[in-house]
Length: 428
Ligand SMILES: Cc1cc2nc3c(=O)[nH]c(=O)nc-3n(C[C@H](O)[C@H](O)[C@H](O)COP(=O)(O)OP(=O)(O)OC[C@H]3O[C@@H](n4cnc5c(N)ncnc54)[C@H](O)[C@@H]3O)c2cc1C
Image 1 (cartoon, rainbow, N blue to C red):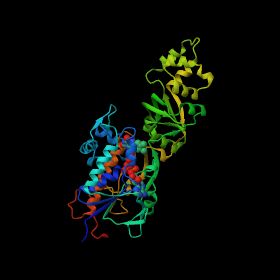
Image 2: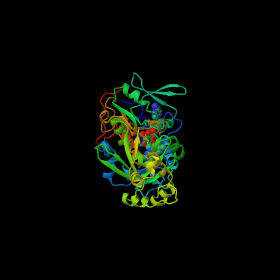
Image 3: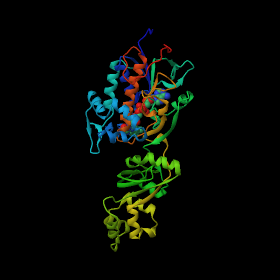
Image 4: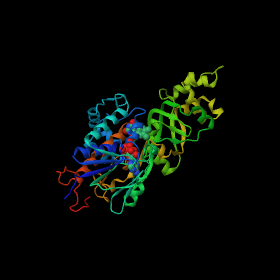
C-alpha cells in the first residue's frame, strides 16, 4: 500500500511537458515538473516573437496529412486534443484566437507571453510544483531519476514519469538533445536528430551574399522533387541569407530537400521569379529594343524583375547570357539553384528524428521503461510550420500526462487505452 498520494514527475517544461502536467494534475495526481532552465516555456515564448501560430483551421484529413508517415499516430493524439480543443483551451485561459488568411490560427495579440503567463498561474494554483535548474541526467541503478542541480545531484522517485525534453533546435532555449545518451543507455531506439523546417547552404558569390543577405524574395514559386520523384511547385516567400536560403517556402520543402541530399548529395531546386507572367510574355517583352536603357532598367520595366531577383539572375547567368532575351526569360521562369546541405539542427525551427514509435506503446509509454512516457518533439515525427508542431506537442503531452496519471494510480478507473500497471512494481 502507498503511504503517500500517487506522484508523477514531468521532465521538461515546454508545451508538451506543461500539458502533461496539467492532464496529470487534473486527474488528481501530485505533479512535480523539472526543467534544466531557470524558467519554463522558453521556446514557446520565442515562437511567439514572429506571431505565435498555435494551430491550423484546415479540415481534419488535410491536417493529419501534414504529419506524413506518422499521420496515424498523431491522429490518435488529435482524437484527445485537436485544433478546436486547443482554441477552446486558449479561450479558457483568457486568450481568444483568430484564423488568418492562410488558415493558420493565432492568439488575437499574436503573442505567447500572455498565454504562458495565464497557463503557469493556473498550473501553480492547481498545485503543480515547479523545480527549475534541474538537468535530467538519466536513471541511476535503482531506476530513480538523476538530476544535476546547483547544490549537487538530486535523486527523484515517482510513480510515473513523463519525459518531454524537446528536440535539439535552438539549444540555448533548453532543449539540446542530450537525453539521447540516457535513452540509448536503456536500449531505447532513437532515430538520429535532424534539422526540420531549416535553411540550406548555397554557394553564393561573396558579392551576392553581402549585397542581398536578409532580403525576401517574393512572390516566387519554388519547384522541388518529391520523395516519389514527382515535381511539386509552391508559391510563397523565401529569404536570402549569407549561407544560402531560409524562410517559410524553404521550410515547406525542407524535409524532402534534406532527405534528397542525404540520399543523393546536392540537389537542384528551381525558382520562378515572375509567377504572374508566362514565359511567352516575358520573352516578348524582353525582346523589345532596350535603346539607351540599362539592362537593370530594361529588366525592371519589361519583366518586373529588380533588386534581389535581378541579383539572382546575375548569379545564374554570365554577362553575355544576361543580354540574350530568350535565355533571360527562360531563367526568370526557371532559375536553377544547387542546394548543398541543410543547416545544422541547432539553427532549425524544429527537429526530425527522436524516440522511435516502435519503442513506445499507444499510450506513449517506453516499452523498455514501464511507467515512463514520452511526449512532444522528442518523439520521431516532424511536420511543417503552420501550427502543426505545437498542436502535436500539446496533444501528445495530454495523452502522456493522462496515461502517466492512470499508471501512477492503479485504483483509479482506467480509460480504454490507458496502460495496465504491473501487479508488483517498486513503490517509493
Ligand atoms: C523560432 C521558433 C519559432 C517557432 N514557431 C512556432 C510556431 O509559430 N508554431 C508552432 O507550432 N511551432 C513553432 N515552433 C516549434 C515549437 O516551439 C516546438 O515544436 C515546441 O516548443 C516543442 O515543444 P516540446 O515541449 O516538445 O519541447 P520544448 O519546447 O523544446 O521544451 C522542452 C523542455 O525540456 C527542457 N529540457 C531539455 N533537456 C532537459 C534536461 N536534460 N533536463 C531537464 N530539462 C530539460 C528544456 O529546457 C525545455 O524547457 C517554433 C520553434 C522555434 C525555434
